[in-house]
Image 1 (cartoon, rainbow, N blue to C red):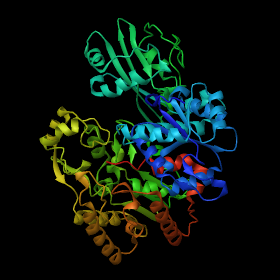
Image 2 (cartoon, rainbow, N blue to C red):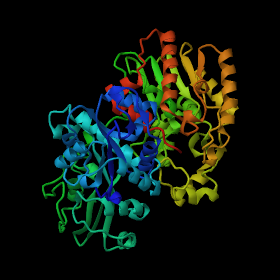
Image 3 (tube, rainbow, N blue to C red):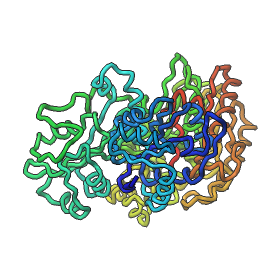
Image 4 (cartoon, rainbow, N blue to C red):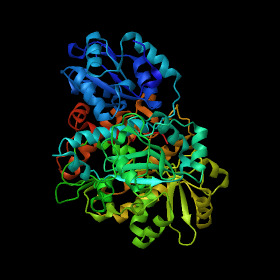
Length: 610
């Protein structure tokens, strides 16, 4: 079959005889390195991968977990029923067209059946696997953060939960859909251009403007232009829509297929006052002059911030707290949430869309106890990369038996001291101070990591007047902070500190992380000595589980799933020993079978290079 590779948005993989060599139900299978590399390269380029296999789902994901490949797939369809109808349902759930999908299967009968149920579907066997690998080698890796994959994970989570509701409108009203319309289009021109060129199903005018034409359009004062961002309780969708209007007539009006069925296009259309437009071709939704969808931007259905950051306990006691960035988040995937277990991980601020990593920096944990509510509010109000919860004091609110914290944020984030009052705020990579003008262009253009916060020259000027750079925490300062945290906790609370890796990550390409293994080594030694001297203190040493370079995922702080799985075993035993609480530790296969979307969210999506 003649495959139009440039049209591919989704690749659906059969497993036996296709992704791997052998038949799983008949014995062990052999992973094909060529296919592993192809999937990774496709994902880096923004092409999503899914599974349609006749097999046992638990066994399939056990194999994929063992190869550290499970996180690369979404919408897995693994059972013994015919594949054609399953692919049809998958495409409907994902909001994608058969014409933009490639289905790979070694059995010709399966390929023919798939096309019968999905006209226009591209299919391939062994020969096409080679061609796809060659195509993947040529692609530009412009989605290394796997943002497109993450957005389909959100759709997958929504699909699973939607089945529990009696009607679609009931589900939408409980989804807490929030839509924002902004006009600084010139700052997001590449994303807008991508939408204009690629969207079809919710593209009402289907005008394909070039990058130069769009640049002129969004800067033309005669046009009212804007882009649309969407989030709901399942996650952030990013920029998913664009409109351009002149004299109350739409030139562009388009939305990503990820928003199909949410009513976003009708909401924006109503907000614009129902302008005229010339519809081109078929669309997956219709516009009307009959008002707003009543489930969007509802004031009374906001998800509480605590619900965004914590897994609420089911019982009356708060006994255990996991507080940290991706290491603790990933480990927790292998721990069954139960009575009295709270979590506070890195989160995305609902106000700004910024990734709030500093909430688990030890300087912030200390100040959570020492700063007043007024101080926290004042700092949050003047900084676009923070909110009040970045000084969360949940750790001090309840009589926890065991508290787990991490030192990972301490070795990288820069600290800034408020000149007038002395409060400390941690943010971004400390080797690129925000107050150094030499770094400003890098921050403004997004070449330096900004935790998804858009920074302007005007803000950096104001920030440099109010704040001074205080460096990165030294090992001594980290230990001092841990001592203060120990002091502020209840005397009988058992404080456990997660240590960093002392093994050099040889593939590191980020100057901000060069030599950090040596910094971790010094901090680790100090914390180990501290735990010998102090009661109710202990540590979990990741270095016990590192087996060399194969243990790293893509970063000094990101490891393959097996490392987190082994760490979870020791954490479960520690909790049982200290509290007697029957905390359960789940196998990888169990996690995939019983709560796959939570596993994806907690383990895979956090493994992102910074």
